[in-house]
Image (cartoon, rainbow, N blue to C red; front, side, top):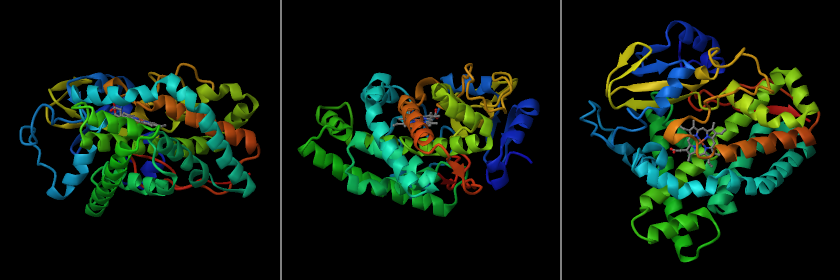
Length: 399
Ligand code: HEM
């Protein structure tokens, strides 16, 4: 098999192909997307920190200057929302936006949320246990991070069911060469999501609550530190990033435990292993398999010169199985201590929500181990067709 992000078999198990790339072709051109695939940990890690690359090129030149077609006009409402969030901008705008929200995500702030996260995880798990089992993804892995981020931002409970479909539809645009239908669905979702948040932020400006949307709406009013578009872009980003990967990490993590019963038993016997276990599960089946960067100035990677104006595809899933960095990388070892996995990225865009994701995973794995000591897989799960945001369709279990 070759690197083929549209092939379900590859998506289900990309690791042999990654090994082949790392060994034989660590920097290779991938014709179907016109990108350079980067397979080794050292290169992925270095490029994430290299300011000659960017998540965008629009801070240094136009589409034309980079030899690119502007996006089709129908996508304009989508990019307007997405490019107003910190993930798709570079300094100095990135620095300003990140600083405004980073206070809410410091390890200390996030630690203060732990009791609430634990309570939600416990309630969801109790529900699953009462029903004798069900879909761990839909019943625990999804609602936990959605509820947490929605509460932080202040999205009313009655509207929360809207968030997951909007976010999933928006993520469709990030897959490689999305179909026209997927693109239109993503544009529609971004437009509706933005309209919804605009209304909510205006309401909160009039009657502030103790939540992040109210706080950010206040910053818009304070002067020129945040525009209304940036407020919307920030909220969309937080709501999306705030659960999409966490859901997949939880589902893939449990699937890895079921396939490695010895490790699952080890964790049951010693819950003190949880911190290293969470890191190892994030490494072993990386929830976001690939992130892209634009080359803003020619760079040399592993002896290959990659010219300005092209895109590199950083293969996180491959980097996380690199034997040059991880001893016995295909083995799940929940006690692994030397584990510099790259699942949260690196450099200026390093995941802002990493402390929160860790608390959410620790609490949901902990609640399931505690309250469902005989948790078992009910049927073999299947992977969703998406490669970049890689996750299971469902995870049916019995308790
Ligand atoms: C297991 C769960 C998660 C994983 C694997 C993950 C992974 C990532 C990665 C790899 C990036 C960097 C992307 C790049 O460099 O191109 C990122 C950025 C980001 N993540 Fe996460 N994330 C997770 C959970 C969360 C949560 C829970 C939140 C917030 C509530 C969050 C908020 C963000 C934000 C705001 C950024 C953009 C940071 C910036 O551009 O400066 N993430 N995440």
